[in-house]
Image 1 (tube, rainbow over the protein chains, first blue to last red):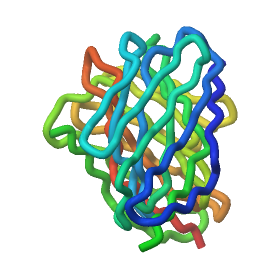
Image 2: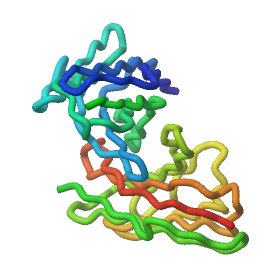
Image 3: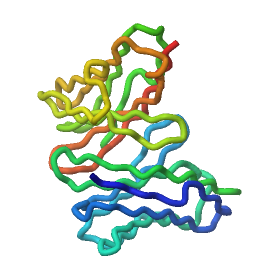
Image 4: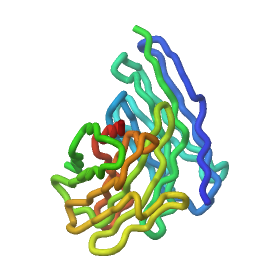
Length: 113
Length: 115
């Protein structure tokens, strides 16, 4: 089955700096890669996703890049703000059957004012 | 759009009782709903996948007789934890997918504490 590795597990950045979180996946059939933000005591919130026919996608301060050959994808947050502090999860799906997601273990991002 | 709700948001129950958690897609029809369990500072663990009108598919190691899942309509799925014990205490989260897409939208979660 699919295996998703995520790093770093914790990340501290100064407000205004950029943050990068990286994930690798094992199943070459995976074709959908969402990123979720989870605040303490809440459910995950979809912040951006990318499909395998696209190499990069951007939404304001957030961008995701995908390298299918190397089987890795990354989340980039620019101009970080304290409200970006949360746990971020990457995930992968091969779109087969019921579209199950395999999650990484999460990255706790702390933005220091 | 794509709002998923859960009820209750938290529940405390005595050991041996059953607890039902509801998951609703508020503004879309969800052919597929998923149930996850999350322990503190850990990732999401998929428990089961349910499709409207059919039996749920449980992940390996998840007791289907203990975690009863019903997906009776395109907007509602329920998870019933039967004969709950303290080790069932956890954060339970549902998600829902529209037909024809694999984007999962998550609910806010339900904190279950079994005394």
